[in-house]
Amino acid sequence: MAETQLSLADASQASADLALPMSKVLRLATKEAHTEIESSDAASLLAHGKLSKEEYVRYLMMLYYVYDALEVALEGHATHRALEKTYNPTLLSRAPRLESDIAHLLDVPEEGWKSHPLHVAFRTSVPAALTAYVTRIQALSNGATPERLLGHAYVRYLGDLSGGQEIRRQVVKAYGLEGGYGTSFYSFSRLGEPGKEANVGDMAKIKEWFRDGMDEGVEEDTSMKGEIADEAVRAFRLSAGLFSAIQSPPEKDVSDADVVLTSKSTATNSFSTIFSRGLKNTFWSILRIPAQ
Ligand code: HEM
Image (cartoon, rainbow, N blue to C red; front, side, top):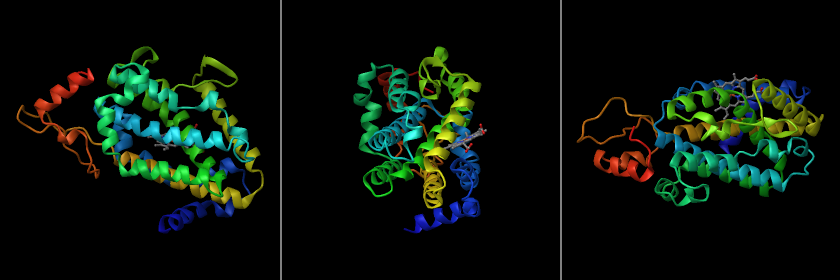
C-alpha cells in the first residue's frame, strides 16, 4: 500500500500534464525513475558487459519469467481498448527470444534449458524481486485494471528498443556472441516486415508506432493516464529490483583456495557464492562455458 502511494506521488509529477497524450505523460512521469535505473551499478555492469557469463544468464532467466508473464497477460487482454493498438506479439514478444538466447549461452537445445543445472538452481532459489514483479503482472491481469499492463509494456519494450541496443553491443563483445546468436532478445523485425531485421532507424519507427498506439488507445481518459503512469513508475521500481538481484563480478583475481565470487549486492540467494574454486570449475564444465 505504501508503495502505491509512493509511486502515485512520483507519477503526480506529470499530473499537471494529464492533458498531454499518454506517451508524453509516461515519459514525464518516469523521467526520474529512468535516470535512477540508468545510473544504477547493475545497469552500468550490464551496459559495459561486465557481468560474468553465469550472472548474465541468470539475468536473462529473470527477464524470461517477467516477459512470459507480461506476454501471457497482454494476450489475455488483447482486445482491451487501451492495449489493443500496441498488441503485436509477432513484433514485440521477447519470451521466446530469451529462451533461445539462454539455450545458446548454455549450449543446450532450446527445449532443454529448463533442466540445465543453472536453471534448476535458479528455480530452487527464485529472487524475491522476480516473484514480486511476476506477481504484480499476474495480479493486474486478473484484476479490475488490466489497462495498467500498458505501463509495464511501455517500460519493457521501449527500454529494449532504446538503451537495450547499447547493451546488445556490449553483450556481443563481452561473451563473444557474433552473428546474432545469443542476442535475439535485442533484435526486432521491421514494422510490418517479419523476418527482416530492424536497424536503429527502423527501431525509432517502432517506438513511434508504439507511442501512437498508446495515445490512440488511451485517448483523453485522464484517469486512465494517471493509473498507467503510476504503474510505469512501479514497473521501473520492479525492474530496479531485478537489478539488485544481480551479483557483482569479483573485484580481484582470486587464488585457488579462495571462494570465488563475492557480491556487493543485497541479494542473499546468490547461486555463485556457494561455489568454491574447485566446485566452480566443475560447474563451468557442466555449463560448458569457459570459467570467467
Ligand atoms: C543501461 C542503462 C540504460 C541506458 C543507457 C538507457 C538509455 C536510454 C536512452 C538513450 C533512451 C532514449 C531513447 C529515445 O528517445 O529514442 C531511453 C529510453 C527509454 N528507456 Fe532507457 N536506458 C537504460 C536503462 C533502461 C532500463 C533498465 C529501462 C527499463 C527497465 C529503460 C527504459 C526506457 C524507456 C521506457 C525508454 C523510453 C522513454 C520514452 O521515450 O518515453 N531504460 N533509454
